[in-house]
Amino acid sequence: PAREDLNVPKIFASDEFDLELFGGMRFDTTADIVIPPSLIDQVIGQEHAVEVIKKAATQRRHVMMIGSPGTGKSMLAKAMAELLPKEEMQDILTYPNAEDSNNPIIRVVPAGRGKEIVAAHRAEARKRVSSRNTMLMVIILGVIVFSIFSGQLIMGLLVVLMLFFVFKSMMPRDEAMVPKLIVSNKPDSKAPFVDGTGTHAGALLGDVRHDPFQSGGLETPSHDRVEAGAIHRAHKGVLFIDEINTLELPSQQSLLTALQEGEFPITGQSERSSGAMVRTENVPCRFIMIAAGNLDAMQGMHPALRSRIRGYGYEVYMGETMDDTMQNRARLVRFIAQEVQNDGKIPHFDPSAVSEILREARRRSGRKGHLTLKLRDLGGLVRVAGDLARQAGDPATTMKHVVDAKQIARSVEDQISDEYIRRTRDYDLTIVEGTLVGRVNGLAVVGNDAGSVLPITAEVTPSQGAGAVIATGLLKEIAQESIKNVSALIKKFSGTDIRKVDIHVQFIGTYNGVEGDSASITVATAVISALEDIPVRQDVAMTGSLSVRGDVLPIGGVTYKIEAAAKAGIHTVIIPQSNLDDVLIEERYKQMVEIVPVTRIEEVLRRALVPEDKEAFEKKLSMIGKHMEIPKMPAV
Ligand code: ADP
Image (cartoon, rainbow, N blue to C red; front, side, top):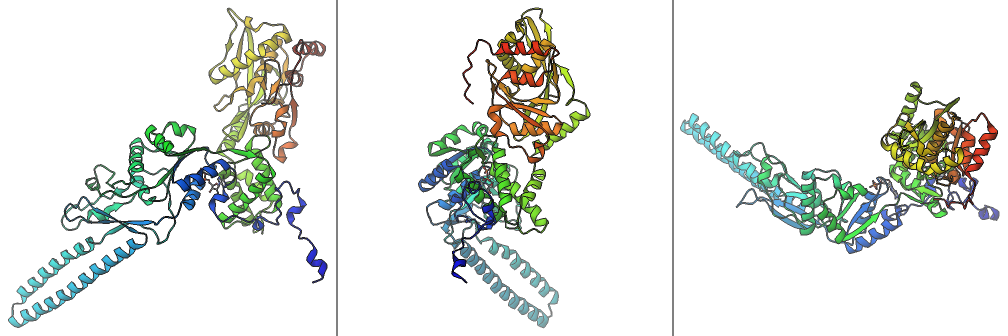
């Protein structure tokens, strides 16, 4: 080749995108991305947890991990098993106990020896059986020959039958002497990782199977019915238990004993089974415990177990988001490559597909300048997109596949929210055109990642006594709080002292999961509309918190709320200015709604209310800001 050809720098498909977007990574598809070999280096975000795990591994300490599902807890636990300092692993065997058949003997041997021992015993037993069979044959033949010669045929046959049964009944005894391998490791194997999440007592602590034939020569010997538990299989390794609080208290108690003693006998766990009579000698279980759960889970945990793990280990919190930096974006690109490689069947992602996943990671973080760390869900999206590409027979996964996958891989909440919108439409609960007095379309988040239009109505009646805010349930708190906040504003606006009136506020089609003060500007607008008898535009929806001074403050879930409004047919969405950067709505909604960022309640009212007398209205509005030098509220 010409000299020039060698100097031409390689062009990657990703060069068509901003280099910063991929954190400096250059690739044609994610197949070009180098994946670190060790699991701990594959963990993304969670730097603190990674550091703790490394430290805990060298010191062989227990760890408690607190955080949301799908953020990498079990992945870290697995990584810890890889990191444990090298130790000789062991096999565990049960032997029959000649003195007390209900108390099988436990033997511990180096890893790999267990299999050999069992094989040797088996061969021995087989040899004994076959030599006895040969002997039996010789004797039987002898008896037959003798009986033929002596004419005692019947007698001879009887003797043969008797001999046969005597020998047969001795055979299972031989098999019964073979020990059972209950924990088996390959020679030179690494520390085991055992996931004990959601196991019942038997699977966790070991069990002895029931024997339907408890006597009469047909029974399975008790040592042969012993099964190791997760705690035993995790011997010298890591035992991971997620949602630790769902473990029954007696099991937690036993787990604590196992942790403290480093050994735990196996006994039948179901009371009425014959296994319950059996109890082995102590079985070693020197494992490192990684208990995980969300914050609630920690409260449901046996206090003694918790303090044991804490006292002899570390407690880490898992992050839910990370900063949207070059480095972290590069890590997410690697994450996609990892997920594709782990799946093994889906095509790698091209730069357009990667950019769409990155966008989704921003969107799902729900915070300005952040990327989500709920990576199990994001990995789910990667797989669905990859499956679509594979079904289509495409060589790489592209943006189109990711966009289609988002439709398919939606959360349950999101689907419920759609269903809810459809149903409220049927019942005419959602009004998205015309004007009405005292009724405002608010917006709420349902679950984690779905929005919903939530209309609020207000009505004002003269009070008999001291004015009251009348509302039910959760709304009462929200309404009281926001009405307290807006009372000063209302007084300035309309000269009305709200202490002289009763204000009735109602959510239409209320349901759970509505988060607090993001309904403040909605309640304020509804109340002012009702007080002043000014109609509200129904094609407008709004979300925002409110300060006593009338500043509109940021709220959460803005993207999902806007998308819900668009789906419901709303044309204008009012949001806090400070949330503008959090808006990462899908392309298809962009044409459907106008987003109006605001900083002040006056702007909200100007947009939403349709006064008859515009001049008087403006004058009243100007009263709200009067006598206040407004220092800008810092964004929360
Ligand atoms: P958890 O135990 O917190 O519920 P897992 O560790 O089981 O979550 O995560 C499930 C999968 O999601 C992992 O196998 C991995 O593919 C991906 N994943 C989750 N968190 C991370 C992370 N921090 N870094 C890389 N991959 C992750």
